[in-house]
Length: 313
Image (tube, rainbow, N blue to C red; front, side, top):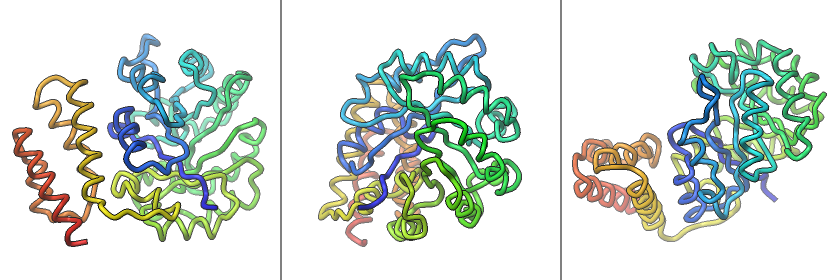
């Protein structure tokens, strides 16, 4: 039985519309995570966050909302929102490496604040109606920091600890430190999920073989690039991938057309999926997609590019 596959939250990409279309067309993902929920300066919520976790916009899939608190007070407000929307699980982001987030003391900025970590986890885990999980990195500056912090996390009944096998300073570049993750794996008492550079079936099989007792494997950019990857990891094959990609794209286009105003906004949103999707498409064809100025020319470029890509695969 393959490890459970979880879809990492990616700001600007894996919103409710994307998740639902992905789940309908490709499936094979056991758990989806929302891009992080955060508070505005006045402790209000962003409208797009409220829309994104509304259960009515996430039917037929297992969604865990992710929150981005800096302290226990923000944790209480954000977990209240999660419970109010009917969820029984929450994920706490302690891994976001973006400079503005880190400087605010949120995300992986918490890695250097063990007392704040304790306060946040105490507040979240006091909610007996919530299963709490954490997404984190191996360290802020060096990949051995989490090993020293592990006893802090093991004071709490976490449902899982998802570890991105890079440091904050690395952002999303450079090699994953699987050796340092292995040290965590050998001693951790909490259920562990591995995250980082699982971009192919071979990557998945290698991690699964090296860490057979994982609670799951989290994929992010790998699924954005190859939406078939989760299904392939479960042993499924497909005959007409081009039609599936185009169907997926059409569903996104329809839903974003209802939510956004005007052709320019719709095109701008749709073009973001090509930041990652099918990275080996010919450069001239990808350029035709991203340079399109009308929906008709864009749609033609997408159709021709996808059909050409799979004809040559």
